[in-house]
Length: 206
Image (cartoon, rainbow, N blue to C red; front, side, top):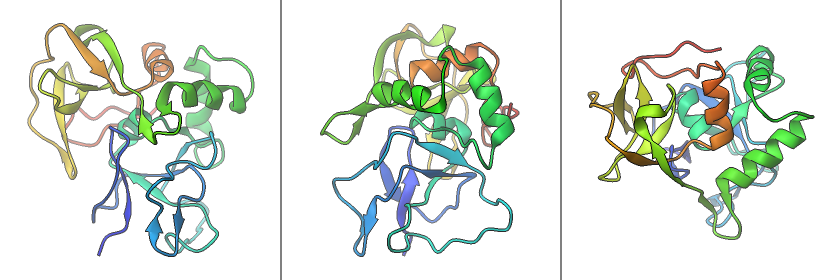
C-alpha cells in the first residue's frame, strides 16, 4: 500500500504509488500510524530536494526522522509553497534567491512564504484570488473557472493529474485563483524557470 506522502498543488497530501520527480521536507509529520491527521508542517523552512544526493539512503517515514514528501515536478512543489533546498540544490537555491524580491537570510524568505501559503490552525493552503491568467508566467498553478487545478506552460493551461498532465487547453479567460505563492510568482517573472514534467511544455530548471 502506498504511503501518504504525495503532495498535490492544492496542498493536500495523499497516498499515491508514483515516486515523483522531487522530494520535500517540512519536518516530522508522521508517527507510528502514518501521516498525522492534523499536522502538515513542523517548521517554516519547507524545501524541495533532489531524489538522490551523495548516495544517501533513507527509510521512508522512519521513527523520529523527517517525513519525506514527494512532488510530480518542481512546479507542483512551488505551488505547495516549497523552495529549492540550499544543500542538495545549492545552484537552484541561489538562482531562486537572486530572482526573489525578498532580501536577507533564508529564514526571512521562509517567513514570507509561510505567510503566503499557510492558514493558521486550519492546516490548509492559502489561495490567492484576482489574478489574470493571461499575465501569469510559466510554472504558475491555478484553479480555472470550473475548479480544475493545472499549470500554465507553453502558453496553455495543462490540467493536473496524479501521474502527469492532461491535454492542454487555452488559458482561462479573465481572473483565476492562484495556488503558487505570489513571492514565487515574482521569482518566475524575474527569470527563474521551474522544472515542469514532460507533457506540460516542460520548462528547464534554472
